[in-house]
Image 1: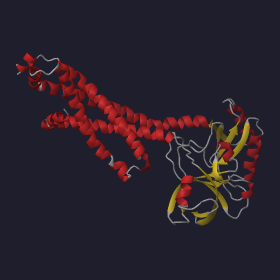
Image 2 (image 1 turned 90 degrees about the horizontal axis):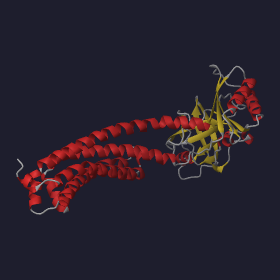
Image 3 (image 1 turned 135 degrees about the horizontal axis):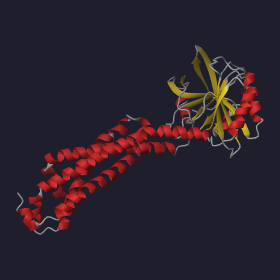
Image 4 (image 1 turned 120 degrees about the horizontal axis):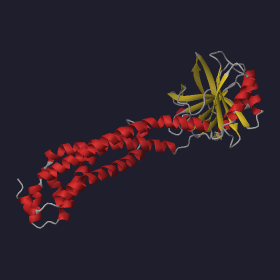
Amino acid sequence: MLRHLLKLTWQRKTRNLMLSLEILLAFAIVFGIAAFGLRYLQLYRMPIGFDGRDTWSVQLRTDGAEEAIPADVYATLRRGLMELPEVREVGFASYSPYRNANWTTTWKSPVTGAKVRTNIMQASDGVAAALGIPLVRGRWFSSVDEGAAVEPVVLNRRAAAALFPGVDALGRQLTDTEDGATRTRRVVGIVDEFRHKGPLMAPDNFVMTRFAPLARKDRVTTVLLRVAPGTPRAFEARLNERLKLLRNDWTYEIAPLPAKRAAIMKEQLVPLAVVAIVGAFVLAMVAFGLFGVLWQNTTQRIPEIGLRRALGARAADIYRQIVAEQLLLSSLAMVVGLLLLAQLPLTGALGASLDWTVFGAAALVSMATIYLLSLLCSLYPGWRASRLDPVDALHYE
């Protein structure tokens, strides 16, 4: 049966060429959308590196002043905020999680000498507790680091492996250059992961440096507060009131991290939604075209179908033949598509965005979709062909 279908398909190769190209196009579109969505699902299931469910963010608006904020101002802010009964911990950072922005720098690996690009964030001693960052090894910044000759840093696993390949990064030193000055840092802790843009951010190298206003004239404008579980949104008014008492000449942008997470998730899912809508429209056009071509092909084969019926073929046999031919043609088009698309993970053209796990899952979803589409488009033409009367078919002009 398969050999016969292959022979028939080959004999009509010119007529089937455009149909095969339509199927190949539909397969590529479905594969792209499926790979996009499955990559997002893969990222969503990865650890994000912090909790943040009971954390609030306060963005300090200092009316355009760019000079460093004195260390005693940070101390006053911390003391004043810790007096609120809802607040459990206060930390200061260069930016808040769930912010769609990057601050990157380049480090020189002490092991290989290669330059390694990483995300970087300044964080105070209280940030780990405020965000709920679990450490894999070592420790977080603390008062023991105040005045130390070598500044401490905390790396995520990915940065540790990139900067210190093949060796233990904990306790080792690395250098970076900022404003023409070379600084030496010591790795005091390692976290598993830190994806500050949220669950849909691709894993990346991350380095956290200690925010120490007593040692240097630094400036960070984000306050992170760990609050009691179940703290209502009405806490925002009391928090703003306390901040105004502490520093009335500034304005404050206050938001719970869960709200910021929801906002950035919505923003990051917009491209997927747009691609899915466009893909659905193109797929519908392909389905209409496929249905029309199948109907036309079936009409052109009326004499052939009539001869088969006259020789004793049942209506069900004709039905199965039409459907099987279409599924076979779809299979051949998808094999070509898979051979072409497999070059992407083989060459690493899209990096970790399309690994073999995502490729395999996207291929299965795409094949199932195309088979379903082909089946639905061939059902009516097959039924119409199976209902032909042999006498009428043999007299067809």
